Image 1: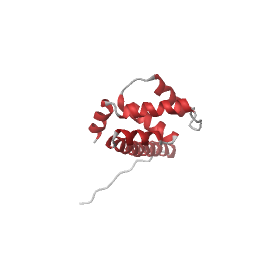
Image 2: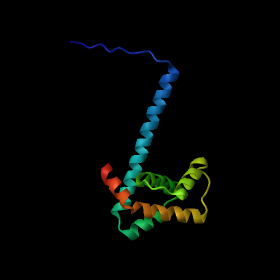
Image 3: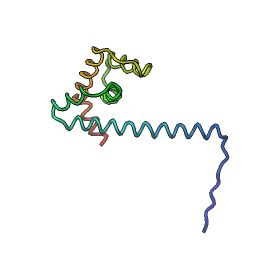
Image 4: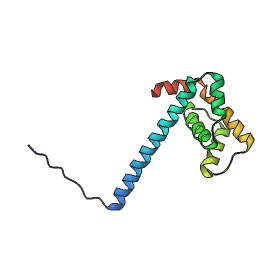
Length: 124
């Protein structure tokens, strides 16, 4: 028995938009998987090694990881929101030394927060 597949003609603009959405979803899933692995690596380290690793992150990685951990933690920090928004609006802007130090400190504290540890365990 042979099966026939029926296809539907879709306007090119719609097909392109759907493909762009699929590509965006796949890219975000891959990006989140990389961040999940990075956070798991931080959690596997002892306190001092974790702190040193966090403090050695370049700005983009620092802010991406901070955003990911912040979303996992469920906390509500005006500072984290503002720094993430600032980075999203102007990704090329370099953080001040005070902002960078505060972001690193917040990331280190959030990584060790019990809500993040349990959220990472739930994700696998």
